[in-house]
Image (cartoon, rainbow, N blue to C red; front, side):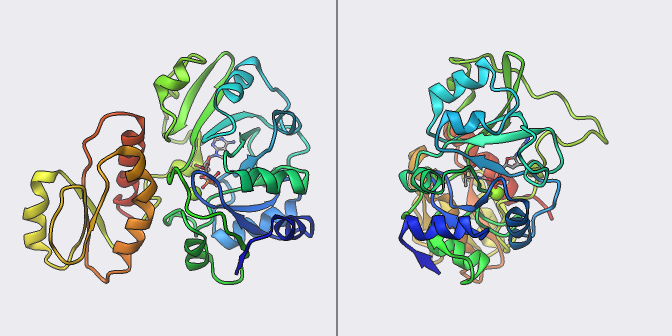
Length: 313
Ligand code: TXA
Ligand code: MG
């Protein structure tokens, strides 16, 4: 069910309900970040594993400070430089944040979205809200209100804010002392962050270690149809073997069932998830994606998502 009024959406949150909301990256599934019962509904609707923590969305740095036990100078520099915007900052959790938000962990992920409707909703509600991408766990994130309904059903109210401008999820960084490490690639790249605070590599994982960011499982953002990403030069060969494939490519083709992608990074990212959904709806036996070769943080994030979309089950 699509709604247009921020007041209506805020009322649903105040009643302990769930409402999807637009951000500049993807649509989020909102609930009161301090209400454990409301948050349980978010996990249930998404079918999300309980150990995968949620991002808490705030409308001000003051609100961010209210949900962390340590707002360091490093966190503050990042927020001053990149908020509102697609950067999520992982900091120590304040005890008033229910454990269900943080997957039982001692850190909390915070982000101030750039979309005016998102901030308007948080301000009207007056408290922070959780916002995982508003899709069933593991599947493609929604970049239109209609995608939310396709993924989660008519029962979930969606505040319609139009198409998401960025199209892929926020960059996630963890703050450790005076440096940060990148847990999820996004449109804000390492070099841009390194101009503000030192960036170190995330510590190597040993078997059995708790996951640094449980959402970073390999298979994610995935269509139902098997998906393969190949170099431009290999597209024709794979198509010869899979004549019923749906092709997503920048290189123009006149094949029926092919989706033409824009050549610039921002436009490609904005279009990516909708293109994967369209290809998934074509009844093809394979989604074939021509691997984009561009250089820069947005292309890196796009290739990261394509890699996860095409990973084995
Ligand atoms: O752009 C976005 O970030 C969107 C919009 C709606 O804001 N939200 C989003 O949420 O992508 P979600 O839940 O789909 O992805 C959140 C990611 C997951 O990979 C999760 O594991 C990680 O952030 N995360 C959340 N809390 C964390 C924490 N305390 N420590 C490490 N990783 C965390
Ligand atoms: Mg997600």
